[in-house]
Length: 129
Image (cartoon, rainbow, N blue to C red; front, side, top):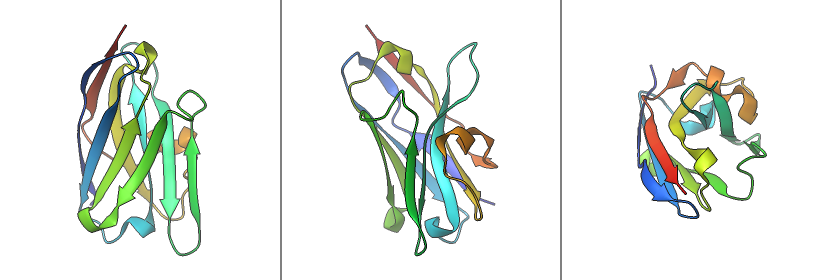
């Protein structure tokens, strides 16, 4: 059973940056999973943000158009941590952010992230204008 714990959220002014972290445990290797981030704002549906798969057979990232060029996903296998670097933040980025994972075979397409079977409890990101 994969467990995931997010951190790094907070309140920031528009144009600012935040880096979210997600520490994973109970898994064997990041290479056996698709991983990613999704978000949910109050009163809105879950929205996939970014997905990633990185192993000996394929390396692929998939970003939602709304964050492309501003957000960057990365993995630190040695520290079992998934990151989301968020730059040029906008008020519409305000949401609870969740990291998620699912085992291979899987699709890292950003639109699939919110359906992954392992996820954390979320970290709140608030962007003020």
